[in-house]
Length: 373
Image (tube, rainbow, N blue to C red; front, side):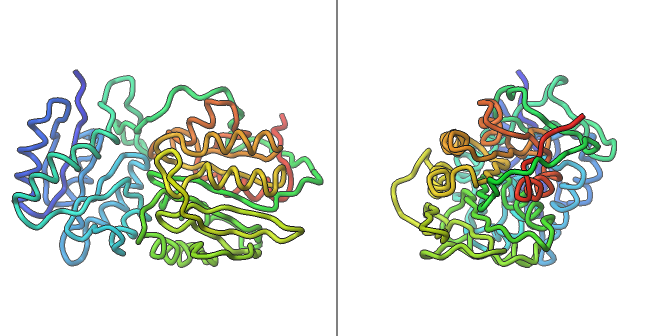
């Protein structure tokens, strides 16, 4: 039986011992190495071939965050769970870790009894949700020629959709149906993906953007501030009804849905507290369905990395209304659940690596691109 391979990087000897002892006793988990040094972990990453990394923030200089940034250069889609006393729900350290590419987080309890219970229950569940056992068939190369890191998968084989290479010639097809709104949905791995997309959009891009990031209350203010600093764009949380203005990026508040309406030429975005949809609040389906009703063919939906299927029903409505849909590809996704479901259903106009998403958002906003020769 293939087991989920875990690399533990933690400065506390007490935590390291507890993690090794408890996780080693779980039948489908395997500890491949335990270290207190991020540098050692990075040096041995290809050799160890982990499926999941457990990473502490490490020390007052937060070496773990520097390790995370370096790890993401080597293995963009390797699941990393931050497990630290500093990764509390809503803390700036947690937001920083998510923006650097952490897949998930969990606060490390202070007492030994609470620590053991947390590892046995919450942490083990997170590892199993994210990790897929390594096999010869599932191993993929790390960036820069390093070999052996498997990318996580969470969906079936995608339907055949156009996926242009970087050198493909894209010929924009002019259309009177201009894009008035870009709606983005993401979940696991989303903060880092959002930072990449927003930072890569040209300064001339002025079409309003509304985002659903699956996230609990307390996080989104910090996320909006961090994304604004990184991208140089105006990023605001939807805390009450607002008119959609050019150049502004709107993010659903944690724990609240967000919808778009249109009266005459004025679009408005607003939160609501209706029940969860697909187990989520905010829900991508709620946003997408409202967008399909409000602007129909004049919308562009973008589905980035994320676990589950939230957004699939909304994408169907957007497609029926004549809108366009871009999804992130499997190789660059932390979890290819949400984008994979849309691609598999044949709803995506294009399936793209994360590095190309912003370029094609710009193309779709200015025209309707089609592949040529």
